Length: 101
Image 1 (tube, rainbow, N blue to C red):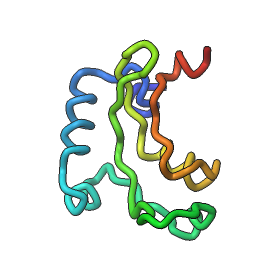
Image 2: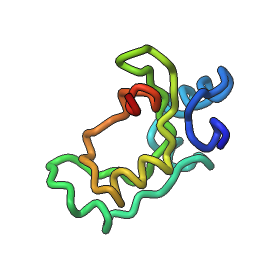
Image 3: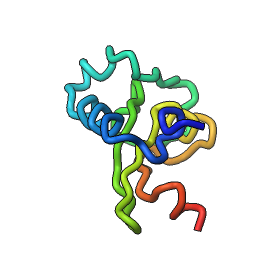
């Protein structure tokens, strides 16, 4: 599987693009072609006073253990929050290799 699909081992260009999109205003992110719409009915398990996401975008991050740069893809976020019922405040902090260890 390519890094474009998984977020693992992204190219410098992929990282720059993810960082650029992450820096946009929410209204610009929502309309970006890479944004993935959230399904509010699948987020009902989240008990929060804050707003629930309307969409997901690719999130670049550096692994807290080894420092490797990866991208938490929007589709993976949608799965994690809506299907696996992960907590909405959870964020990617470890790369794939460190999570496997």
